[in-house]
Length: 419
Image (cartoon, rainbow, N blue to C red):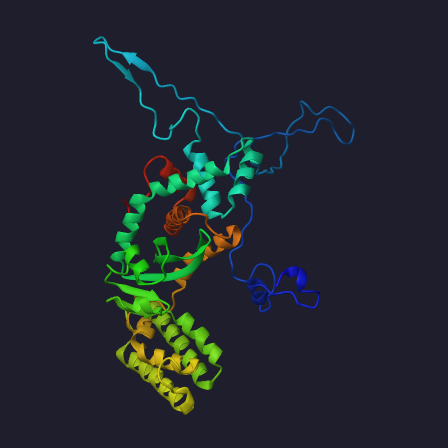
């Protein structure tokens, strides 16, 4: 329904921030660190101001004694303008008659071209801040007085993407060797058709790709889960289960499904999962690497007991052959058959409770689609995702994003892992 057809009777939707604010007062929360604009010890310039005359008798104060001063600092942007550097390559003739021409720096690619810093800023705005191409072009025109065409901006993203090749290979290799990797996928419009954005990540690495398929063929082409030996964390999508790796299922998904059931057994199971999560957090805080065997056995026994009770409470009509069962029966069967994968976070502390890492990494791709709608070409989508993988990994490793993007246009990408 378009907003114009909603009428005046529809109540305004509450944002997540508004819902959270109902449980706490506005403003700075107790115990949270405050922030403010603080003076610096070495300002770029100092502007001294002296009173010209006495405010009482009107006498001239030019030669009077200074008895005190008050300091205030103003933080301001400098005048922004493009700086043009001309590179002149000399040709010199040797005594032997041979003529040799000097070689231009790698970023000097044409008689007139943009430098690495400007190109890095353009990619930063397009890929990290998600500005549309047209608005980015207008921003450069307004700030720099130099119009930059949309086509030029597209070429900058493509050039940055091509330079991420060694980075993508390194990240793929590191994810294959990682102890735990998060996987997720989401739909996206490319060339007017549905494609799938696939993500593989951990706390330090991000790899995003685009594919026409959602399942196994896309996973194989991505080249991570089919070559890894660690734990694969995912939402239970069936094609993931076909790989011979250790699986860990996202319990955030399970909690949402249990909340929708609205039955006592579902509440009991949700409380058990949350209690187990807290026990694992406490054990990690104490420096332990696993729950004690007795506690783990109690969790598993209680888990199976709740699911057995839930199954017995179902009507016979809901226990029809697979494919015709009720949603509740399917949920019970799935949770029972995947007990080890659901409770992986209890038995192996490398496994997390949920798959939030993958969802956070892929969320910005959804934001990009909200702003721009779709990608016009498959190459454009893949270029965006390659650079987004690079930017996300830079941020996870506390690296300056603009500096990292500048390295791409200098001919060498930053690589994770200290190389």
